[in-house]
Length: 327
Image (cartoon, rainbow, N blue to C red):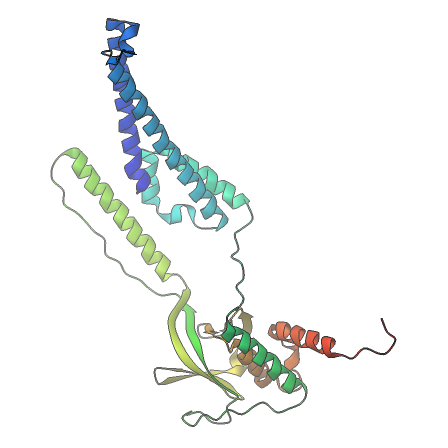
């Protein structure tokens, strides 16, 4: 929209600069070279035309340069982030191409360059807050106790509706990953008046409808939804999530994949949407899930427990006594 509005202004400015130049040349030919100078504080008849043309030319070049720079920067960013060209808003591409082809060309060239560069990957975030650190330390201690052969801790949860003992009872953030169907309304404006006004109204409707369609398509794509806080309970067979008094059961035996990223655990299933649980106790959940799913003889080999296993190994290496006389 900025390019579609700004480019006609640049074009009109260039036309006005051209008109000023024509008037200056006529004035210069009529009054001679001294007409463009300022002598003893008195400006010649052509001086104002020369000054106005110069200022307007600089302003027009500055606006054009800013538009090109913005197009180049946005093109490189969108290309590196592997976004769709112009976010798939093809009506906007046509409008910008007609009103400012140089801006669209700059964006297209920069977008191609960005696609050739390595894809942008946001830095992985590690929990640095005190709650996250306490949860990490608690998970290490839990791992050490279970690895030493101790039974898993039993948590007292009097209002829990499920059967069996409880290994973990903690608050988590809850979300699910799925797509949906989104509807949107198209706007249609009846315009009456000068041709420029009618064309502007039609272009505005096209751009507005294109933006609404792109937003609807973006929102309909699979993404994390249903964000909420949940009480999570782990039993020997199931992870339970309580959402507003409603209990949802996720059996450990049907979990196809389990991974931990920072303070989030991702569980995938064959027939239902993936589940994401986040919070300081995420690594404790990972340890207890591995123990409940794979049993006391094989839980330590779970791939997602590698960070905890490595940390426990480092602690054991530091505490190992050194033999007398060894270097």
